[in-house]
Amino acid sequence: STIHVFAEEGGVKVIVNGSQELIAVEFLDETLLTPENKDKISKYIKSAHERAHKKSQQISAEKMKVLMGDGGGFPGMN
Image 1 (tube, rainbow, N blue to C red):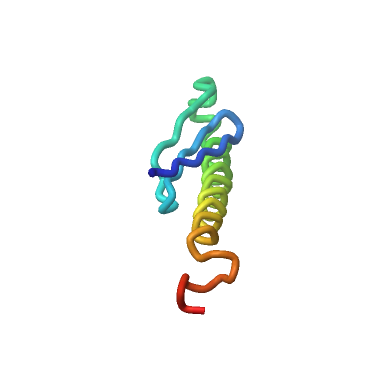
Image 2 (cartoon, rainbow, N blue to C red):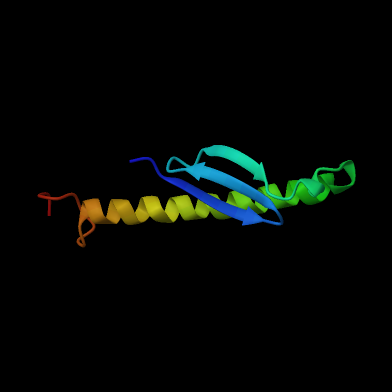
């Protein structure tokens, strides 16, 4: 199954997949799209991407933990 994680910041939505690759950036508030908001938008994208990336890492780690079992090692190699 494909994992898609999103985070929003200031009207900007960022979608990241389970490999922590940026899939999409969506502007939920199109009034932001003005030259005057260039720096603000950049900060929102960066912040949302960082949060989505961390969420994706957490989900990947949780899935790995399930696969590895509670012992933390490879099944059958303990």
